Length: 248
Length: 296
Image (cartoon, rainbow over all chains, first blue to last red; front, side, top):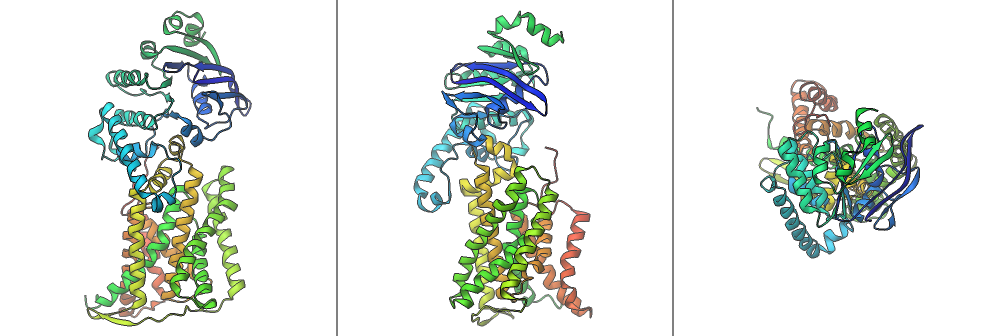
């Protein structure tokens, strides 16, 4: 298990957003997280990535308790995320967006003056990595464009690229294909599948069909709880899941 | 135009050079924290008086004063953030609260400076020869002011475009949450923003003090012009602020000549910045190089 969530509770002023949520994610898999609006999926992503603190419970990444760490510390450990509404640095170029996402650790003004040579070398390495990912995502031709000039789909691809840039152990994708046309949506998931041999993915998605095609394991949430879990074919026929979605 | 001569151009560049130093810090802090920091004025004054200690009290070259002013004013910037703004941030205070708090900080610093040095006018001690330049005259001090300011602009350009720290700063101001998700320690970056922005204000204070004189209201006097520069350039735009600083420098120096030609008191000089500010807000509120606000 690369990621383990144990009995996590999170309330917002009396409303329980997460109620005793536990789940485990195996290495080199794609795990889907589905559920109706307001079921707590994004809250869970926010808790794992440190944007929200748990009330009780624990989150373990590679065996380490990360429940009390800050978002940037969690990112540096190797958990990268994307956001539901695509977030990119709009005022930076595509390449700059990529490079900012590579490891920011141990970066200070000292390097600027004293470790310049090493830094330039590192920059070259990072740049090559960025080109590779951009090529992989087929947006290499946009590298010098400002991110705000990209189309919605291209922005989605860029945010995925940014998440891959730090070579994370696990990537949390919050609705990676929302508002994206079916062809591109499939392409994005094809890319994710290709990346599976290198890392793990936890994906929140409304498009259940696409998850069924690409996931190894699916968790179903409703009203802050995990109500079902299993392989896609097990989930498909699951009564509880059908109830949840039909509002039963 | 008979009164558009070399002297106006020289004076404009000098004024602009000083405004750049002050406005860049103001715009950097605005861009990252989204509030107008009124205590920036007192960072300017603080820098000027710090250099006074080095230059007059200790009798050292004003250049040392400039360097010390940069570091100490930068640290004062950090202190104001750690002691006040960071606390307000963590409580989720509105930008209005931050702005009011900054007025308060400014008041405390200004009164403290007045308490220590008194309200009387003071001057730095340095010599400055005057040279002829294409029909105008330029002093050694003015050459230094222009050179220092230009050098810093190039350094900043290098910082923002070539270094990870600079890119991280742009990232944090662009989207703080995404910056965190990208592994950027936003609070650490904020410290650098305050240090550099504050330090530059300090340098601006020394340059202004050397060009005019030292009074506890030194920073307050240029704050309006600095705001005009920031808004004219497009709030948060570094390159816009540079361009706007020289434009306002020109408008003020040209305006003064125009005022006297029209037999109006040159005491209205500060009104020029005001008029420009109002015109920009009415006609092009996002400034010459700023971006129109977009829904996020």
